[in-house]
Figure (cartoon, rainbow, N blue to C red):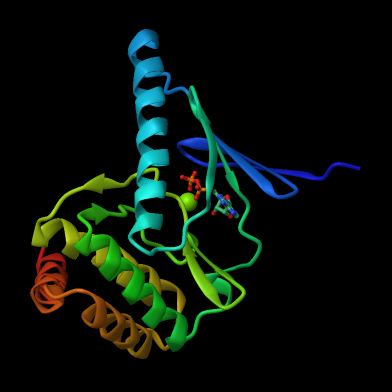
Length: 193
Ligand SMILES: Nc1ncnc2c1ncn2[C@@H]1O[C@H](COP(=O)(O)OP(=O)(O)O)[C@@H](O)[C@H]1O
Ligand SMILES: [Mg+2]
């Protein structure tokens, strides 16, 4: 019997069948139909493109098998979400991968421990649906800030996990200190708002 699992999120319907995942962007009712059509196709194409580029930068991502209209078909990563197997070692790996992305000019846009999968001891980044190209310290800082917020809200030992991430990030990216300084600034801004 074919097993299928369907996950519906804000932007997409994700259909997981054996070793394949199809991610279909769903319509937004508040947008004009024609425009919505075009935006979804473009966003889908862009997501597939960034998935491939990240891979070229040495960041494990699912292999894209097809991209047609508003659907990407990709490899299913068998594994455990980072939030369910968190450790310092994996957080360091995460820092390393984000460092590679950032030095390649890519912002992930949704760095949470649900968008990272550990498969055979290797960390994969998934869900590039909100990704974009940007080389500013601010965009990189916000990207990492989102990740730290996830750690703080879900893991008691978030401080050591954050430190592990930072060490991986520093190892990989020569502008790391500048970006991590900005992350602290973003956190201060948030506190006094
Ligand atoms: N290639 C993949 N391999 C394994 N699981 C995946 C894959 N793509 C998506 N998933 C699962 O589907 C969920 C939703 O997919 P995701 O790309 O994160 O969509 P959304 O943008 O709606 O969050 C993920 O959290 C993950 O559990
Ligand atoms: Mg997601």
